[in-house]
Amino acid sequence: MSRRLGSVLRFGQAPEVRTLAANAMKGTKLLVRTEPELPPGYSWHDYAVLLLHIAAEVEHALMVQYLYAAYSLGGPQVPPKHRDRVRHWQEVVLGIAKEEMGHLITVQNVLRLIGGPLNLDREDYPWGSEFYPFDFTLEPLTKDSLARYIFAEAPAGWDDAEAREIKKRAGASGQTLHRVGELYDRMQKILANPEYVKDADFQAATTTFQASWDEWGRGYMRGARGQSTTTRRQKTPDVIVRPVSTRDEAVEALAAVGKQGEARFFDPDVDEESHFRRFLNIYRDYPEGEWVPTRPVPINPKTELDLDANRVVVSPLKATSRAAAAAAPGVTITHPETSRWAYLFNLRYRMLLVNLSHAYELAGALGQGDALTARGLLINRTFGEMYNVRSLSNILVELPLDTSGSGRVAGPPFEMPYSLDLPATEADRWRLHRDLLESSQHLTAELLREYPQRHTDYLRALEDLDAEALASVRKMIPKS
Image 1 (cartoon, one colour):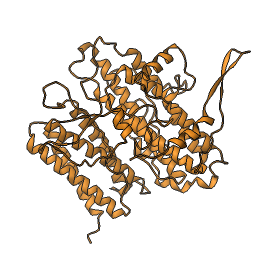
Image 2 (tube, rainbow, N blue to C red; image 1 turned 90 degrees about the vertical axis):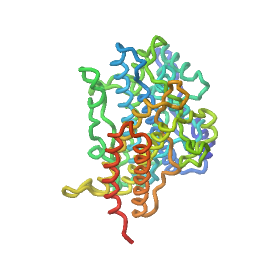
Image 3 (cartoon, helix red, strand yellow; image 1 turned 135 degrees about the horizontal axis):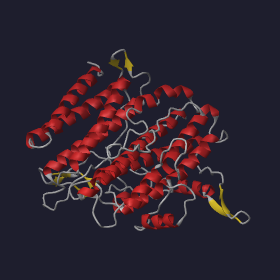
Image 4 (cartoon, one colour; image 1 turned 180 degrees about the vertical axis):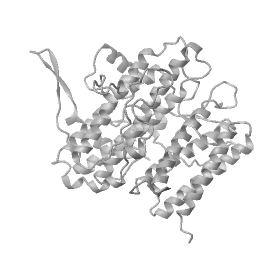
């Protein structure tokens, strides 16, 4: 699935390009900005929705790439004296990934505010677009991948000797690189201008459908992450989840997201570090060949084989573009047991996205008395799937990739489902949840039956939770 957006994005690029002009009298550099230009065939409102869709896909992609990098860290090959350091890096990168989840949710709120369709997808626009920071790749955390992450999150005007070295390293594979901040700067500029997006396009009544901190911020307060490896308070900021009801709130929310990614220095008021600074700290501390901090996980793991029949089968996963496939072909998980865990991972990842998407279709409180509302049920289950994604990732990075005995291990494939579109009616949406839960029950039972020696406590707990969730879901489906 791909969209022909290249010409649209190129058309809008040139007027937005920043140029640095030398101020001869003061010996400083001034940042010169020009106004964005509307691409042909778009209104300003439609263009704003397009940019927000791209932002959502960028945030989703960064989130899963950072998660994969974090779960690659650790393992028995790390020398004992370095294990606390590696565990700390993992906590830091997992914290950044959680903040990207908040960014994704906040972008959905802005889309809801201006009447645009929500977007939880990823990889669905040209890879050569000016806004995508680098080619999507699930890969272990290395000095090279850190360089790409740093450049993507870098602030405008960062151009010292270290910056040039990191940019050179990030682009060594021939990729075209872009800063995420460029996209957020443009979105803010368009949404802030009432000549571009009209006041009437901001619909305050949508806040009852939007995600809020009270619902989604649980456990992610400042300092709640990255504490197990040190007694010193970590500079970890809040996850940003902002409901928005006005133009100013939408612009401020996008500005906060951009600042959390690219701020160059500590914020003196809250003593926290941006994504850019945290990745840069790891980069400076990362070993240059003396020892290996990551497990032997593959690049772009995938599940595509029917191993019992030894034949290729139709996969219920989203088709990626030919350009993406050419850039990073991926490695198939072929070990029979591991592949089953990978299928279960993909299913739970899909369930997370479906729960999140469905929650945006419902308004109101999380509970009525002691009972959860349908919205409350979906939000609770979304958090449950976050924990399942974490648990299954930790399992996969300890399982063999194949049967060769090479010592290579698997990793979480994060493969997208064939569709994230919800059914049109509420009853059919709950039928979708039923289908996914029943599929999970089938995979869980198969793993318990075929491989009873591995992770049985987790699988039996998952069975119980699925049975409880399925009972709740069936109550939402009309009997006739």
